[in-house]
Image 1 (cartoon, helix red, strand yellow):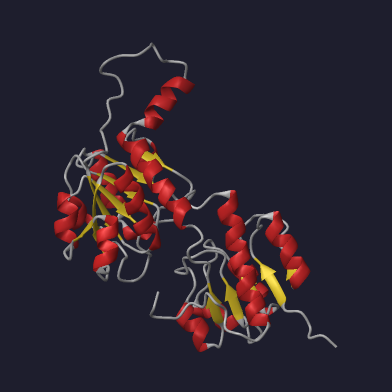
Image 2 (spheres, one colour):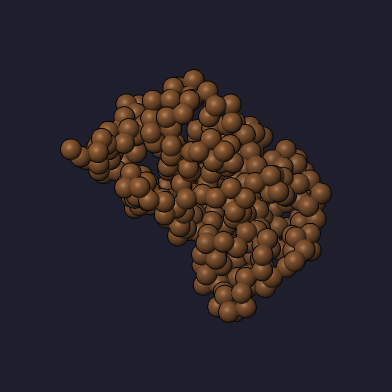
Length: 328
């Protein structure tokens, strides 16, 4: 007799092609609506599943893992970031955690450039005037933005996405600088035309644009705090497509409001969906609803990686995208 199929619970609606393939391979329980599971629903899901497939919106802590019992064996995260999962506690309880790295690299890097252009070229302001029917025609002094060619871009976090941003920025004629936990190999640095700054303080004080592309970890929480934000030039722009917690959002809001920074493009926020209302009112701030990886192709590829991780685990092998505590 064939071995029984793994019981898999999915916490959010996934692309139809992904859900269909999961139904073919596993004993899968899909979400009927796209509403987030409550804490109690997540614990119940973990208690009846061999594999849980959560998303970034599902906070999974040590107490929840303990309350879930011993059936759960794998958390196959639908997404690259795993800061919403207590990976160390999961491993202590014998629960493996996998993710989907590399899939959203190009899409997110595209969004970084889109935000840089949107803020520096004042695209939302022009769009608002057109949608309101208030445009009176071309003027030599209307909607004057800034040229990004020749500007210094400081990339905070030079992993896959940071390097993809560097390549795009170079094509726009920008000067690429970066700060990273570890310096890149010389040949990679040379291929990207990137200048390394060991001191983050020195880098942020000299850049025209800062792009945040590092993960959220205890060491990166408020990495751009009030002190570092004040080091930035008043003409500088900051873009964040990574995790909202990396910036002290209250300090950023105060500085933007006071004209101490030229603008910001934010796809992520420190308190999730609770966006500071003052940010919404600023014409020099572009806000997006965590759209950085939102492409049809990217979402399907994320699902494929989840399926490969679960199928490999079901076959008795180590998931290829296993997350190791302390190496994130």
